[in-house]
Amino acid sequence: MGNANTPNKRPEPVSGYQFQVFVSNIRMGFSKVTNIEESIETQAFQEGGVNDRVYSLCRPASAERTLVLERGLGNSGQVTDLLSPRSAVGRRILPDILIMVGGRGGAVSNIYQVHGAVIKRWSLGELDALNSQVVIERFELTYETLETCPVSKNLAGRSLASVRAGDV
Image (cartoon, rainbow, N blue to C red; front, side, top):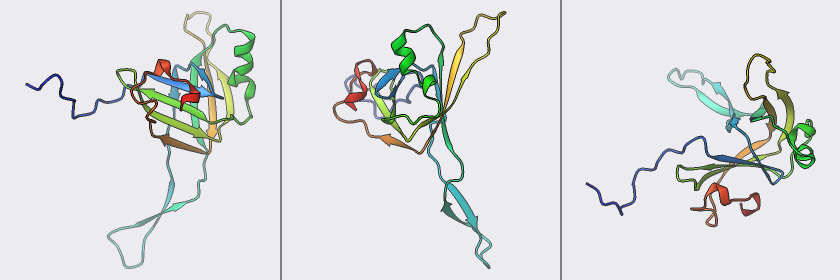
C-alpha cells in the first residue's frame, strides 16, 4: 500500500462541471459552454508516382469558429440587463472572454482565452405552458482564435470561487 503523503503520480481527469466565464471582465453564470476547440483546415495532395501516402498542407480558414454559451433566464435588475450579452448582438466583446476550468478540488486547472468574439445570435429556449422547465437563453459567438493559457503561479492552487478576471 502506498503512503498517504506520497503525491499521486497519475493526474486526475478534470471534471466538466466546475467552470467560470468572464465576459468583459464580469463573471457571468452559464450552465453550459460548447464548441471550445481550436482547429486548422488541411488540403491533401498526392505526389505523382507515390502511391503509399498523401501530403497534408494547411490552408486558409474558410469557416467561422463558433462558441455557444447557455444559461437559465432569470429575473434581473437594470445593471444585469445592461451588462447582458443579449443587448450586444452584433457587437465585438472587449476585452477577451476567459473560461476558467476547475479540477475536482476546486483549484483552477485550465484557462482558455477567446479572442475577437462577436455575438452572432441570441435565442430563447422553448416556452411551454404544460412543462415547468427552466427557460434557457443561448448565445452563439463567432471568434478569431482560442488560446490555452498556462495557469500562472498566482492562480495555482487557488479555488475558482476566489478568482476574479483581473487576477489572470
